[in-house]
Length: 427
Ligand code: GDP
Ligand code: IMO
Ligand code: MG
Image (cartoon, rainbow, N blue to C red; front, side, top):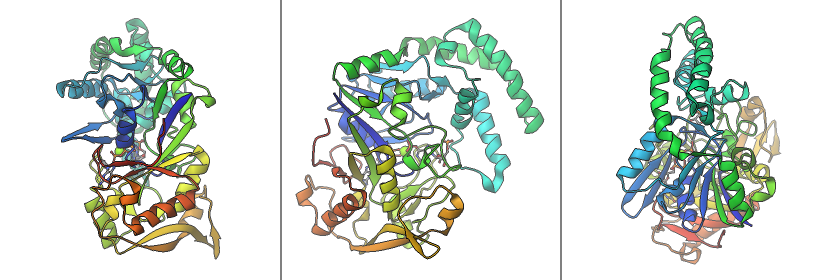
């Protein structure tokens, strides 16, 4: 068996899209298993740049089958727009399939996402307002509409009528907002359904077959470990399981289906949205990293919060995901910083702790303990192998490996597919 899962080891935006695209060249099929269009993955190949939210980043290799698994929540309008965007660019979506069990993001999910954030005021989560949280809420409360329901007009009409009545009560009586119109939603979603139909299948059968036939299956995670519903900085998290555990539930395979768990980690830390961030920088270095690393969200355009590399987070991600390898991205962004800090512990109530705490109150008391490493001045974007890196950059990579206990098999030194060093093959 030969399958790899690419997961975010921090708060998302680690460069998973770029790494997925790179590995998709060797993979035989790419599968997304959770999240929705809250994700934003930028992939650069040659002089082309692609921005994807829902479709797996493997699609840039259009001859490879791509699957959107049952664990993903699908906004049909966004899906169809993305299909048009890809096709207009000459990328075929012929080999793309979506699960009949995936849940559908409805207009009331987006409205409720917005209204809930507005009502929370300064306690807001800072969601992407794409309706992802409310769609997963409906899934777990057993009130969701699945792709297979959308394919059946009668069933869809019946479900929508009942659900919209309840949602409109919430929207008007609790939030004081205008109700949504049944006819408009029904008519729009029937049109989407007509176009979606050809992509729909029981993808769990397909994924099972690929895995069973020992094919090279690449599972693509969205978001990151610290945004995981269970292991993230709750409640400042997303509503799915971006970690390796999400693969089984989100695509319909058993736990032995994954061989290699690749954690994608930036050479520093970023976060978008609210919530704690122990190594966050509020100074010129933070601004420098944001400018050089172009740290602005792909989905919402928001400026990403930037900080030093946090070894406690990576150790935690290595443990809860069973990481077997790392892809360190954006090493080039640190070029020119004289002294680079790495967080190796947290000081809490006079003691050093090395496990990431559950309680946000405890986390707020944690002060990062840093080790300082020498930086480098040389442009590293042209380096093609680890041995070509300046000695101090190598030491930096080795420090990350030492803290996490996980080998860095991929080092990324630029956004382009060509700016990638492979130290050891994953497939
Ligand atoms: P994802 O959500 O994990 O796929 O990450 P995003 O695409 O949201 O954000 C990562 C950003 O960094 C994108 O703009 C990528 O093009 C870019 N990127 C990825 N790897 C590298 C790298 O090694 N160096 C630089 N400079 N940019 C990178
Ligand atoms: P990719 O796949 C970074 C964050 C939001 C917010 C929280 C909840 O590009 O790494 P949601 O809309 O999911 O209910 O928002 O999660 N968030 C992300 N942050 N990268 C992402 O995806 C994210 N997807 C959601 O900013 O803090
Ligand atoms: Mg992103």
